Length: 491
Image (tube, rainbow, N blue to C red):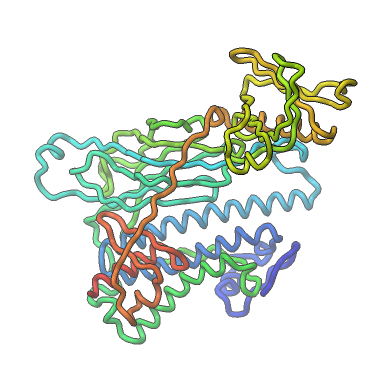
């Protein structure tokens, strides 16, 4: 196993696909030089390349339209992830080159400049209204024009796709209910929502259209099994400590695959200002015209619920033992255990009470109207102190004393960082927005001993109407869904 702990030259395994690409001149070996911080991105790229290769071969073997649509969706999603990861890797290499040249990064940020905390962003309950003509919707005559539709959601290098939905003129809205959660998101995020469509009536090539998977010959079955193992192995590679042989993943040329094609129908960009604890409407930019086979009569708007949870609202910012008195009762000093989190400084009788989620003795609001300052050393207190004043409502001032001057400095730094985080996340710090977790999908199916499905899939699955349910790793959910369909068709 080749492990990079510092900048080094990449090694290329003899006879590997990457060596062939270097020989053909598609890549320079210098591009593959990396440092330890690039390894994780490279492992992710390698994983997606393997998934893409597996999806291409699965697409050629599909015998049903639903299978081909799901495989094509996997291919598009994987390509998008590879492109995003390659872009990130390029930026990282540019930053490394500038550091080696002794120059500062292009943003000109100072090393000691404050950085806001990250957070979670979730989008759910997506509704895209359709605007059918009266003659199409009310009369409802003739052949149904059907399209397979899904959303691709991208925030930085994190990309998710929704379930596949079949749309025809009997529907008035395209709905994607399940929440999609992004983690480690900065406040300056830009969430891109893309709506893709594929015409259901278009013909596509099916590599094994005359044979069911369970009836494949021994040689064909082994070849197909090898393809699936290649796609499945990406999970083990992504969890390892490095690429085998020190290989860096490369973006291989796109394989020529015949099958259903998805086209960008519309897109929208959502930022922090769109995050609200309610259902809101946003504008859609429509990409194509009515003449396209994959066209749908979009109204031009998208409704969804976009919420954000900065870490300063969900995690403990600072905690420790404090002595506190209020301005209204200056002689009444109280020894408490203070916990700064969200929009409150909660004061407990002891630390165990905070760990057991007991009700605090009292709470001091911490918000945009709160003023915090460190006072000069008080001869009576023999230490520095901190005053907290809430200027909204009844103006109240609290005085806080810590055990040491170092503790006082740590609390002041925590307050300043907390105020900075709240100023960057804005309305998301007015109150904790609720994020709903995706619902678990429980599926059952009778397994056939000795079948390819039984060998490759460890978790059972079923197929639901209009979309396929994902399964657990190590095999990707899309590949597992395809195998599930193959097996069900052979029963």
